[in-house]
Length: 338
Ligand SMILES: Cc1cc2nc3c(=O)[nH]c(=O)nc-3n(C[C@H](O)[C@H](O)[C@H](O)COP(=O)(O)O)c2cc1C
Picture 1 (spheres, rainbow, N blue to C red):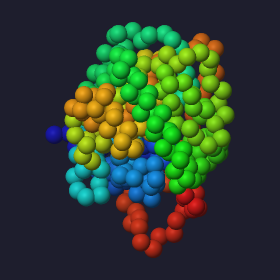
Picture 2: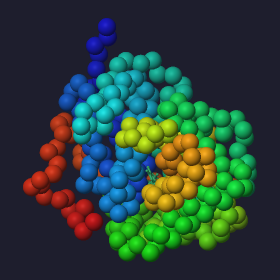
Picture 3: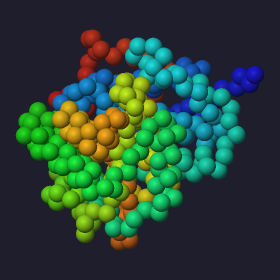
Picture 4: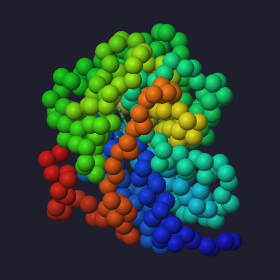
């Protein structure tokens, strides 16, 4: 048996890539620990969006995205991740790294990590090659999830209708709006969604309405949105299903980037019970649980490159031991008032 283990620098480099994962409102709700033998991933409950994400679905999905990013980064560095998911209360994953022969595909997927962006602009009316659709669906299936491509008119209009309804319900909810304003529109915070990365939501009933963020000032591309609309779904809706949905979302988004496709997640219509039910019944035939809506497509040739969104310093999220978060601890500066 090979007992080699990665050193702390390798783990730090893999975590630095893992935290490039997408997360709801760029909340980065994770804590990583490495004690010299195993890597552990925990959710940071202080970063849950209480109004947007009342049942913690987005929080778990976000952590699942980071978990998959970590395995992709580790594989490119010559380590395969053996993951024990939800091994004990409060722990999302315990990861043991074992030596692995890095393949070209591992490097190509890891190289997509720093290139991926959540791109909320309209995509060109250029259909995806069927081969690319198959790659995307396979990447979700490999993580135990289903990527349903929504092409038929009734299902498309159910999906766009659910997104529009969710947007309207959120707009009428002052507590939601206060939370949104705290987490978006600030260009230089280490977390949250910068104004330079967000567009104004389209009012067209034929397009999937993107979530409206504070201060949106990214110019949208011209023309109707030609995005491929997909719903990422799981068989059940347990904590494990949500974590796995996050891993699958990461796989889909990195595969899309690797194929030089733009992408963006939208969970606004999943966050509300009524619109989630609509998607489950009208788009997934009542048989699967919707976890995320994902738009995929190509940008027009003249679209400007999007800047990367910021991340918290690595020393804040990677520690040797779990931090006793909770009672009596001072709330960090950046979270005050949220
Ligand atoms: C669970 C989850 C939910 C998200 N929901 C939305 C959404 O509803 N609308 C949106 O525009 N972006 C959404 N995002 C994308 C995040 O806002 C984005 O990942 C974050 O701002 C970091 O930017 P980046 O993906 O460009 O690195 C979501 C991401 C995750 C993981």
